[in-house]
Image 1 (cartoon, rainbow, N blue to C red):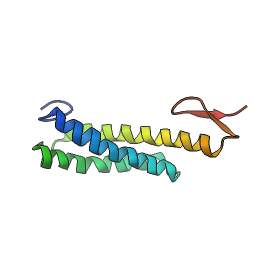
Image 2 (cartoon, helix red, strand yellow):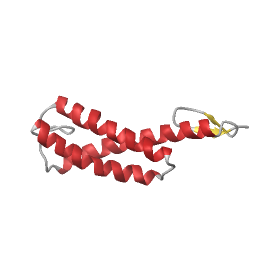
Image 3 (spheres, rainbow, N blue to C red):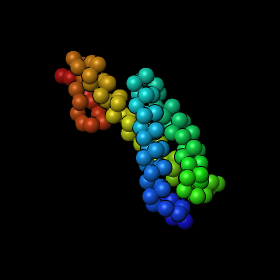
Image 4 (cartoon, one colour):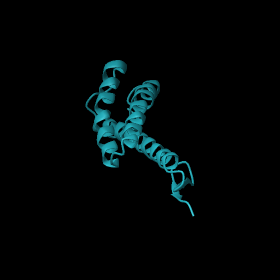
Length: 113
């Protein structure tokens, strides 16, 4: 059993990164579009780690009850969700208030002078 995955790197990439990461990305984007607080992204991404862990168990014969692997999945999904949240929030601020804000980077904006 590795640090990131238990029996197959392919199963880790498919279930955690593609399926879980995609769902976490959409969750962060949806919360940002509805102007929700950032703690909701963390909460829902942590909840999303439970079905991702079950997918490891059911589809790839992985370990179901492993705290280390559950925490790994949770941290990855939270990071993806927060990245999506911030990117969507930046895009919303710059596109909805173009006279007030300008993009200073992919994840940041500032007030126009």
